[in-house]
Image (cartoon, rainbow, N blue to C red):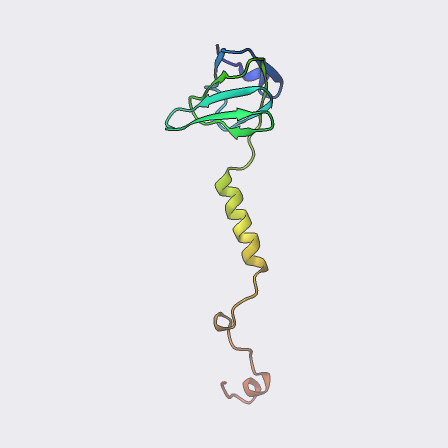
Length: 120
């Protein structure tokens, strides 16, 4: 069973024991509203168990399976910026707020000495 690309924003139910291929969902986020799912992704050595309130960005060749006694209520949401991009933006924002180190700043210009042709 594969999820069509038309239902990426709609919430859907996955019945217990049912597996679902998410081959067209790479880059999107899987949001779990209720239940529990087992998520595997191609090229990833780890499996993930997501429960209500969890969300995770889907990688290539992902497959989910309902791992709860009742149906899992899920949604595939549009993925936001990548974690690396967010980390880079955060570091850049913090760097802009840090005071400059005096050793790295040029010496202040002595206007009077400059006008008289002297250097500091």
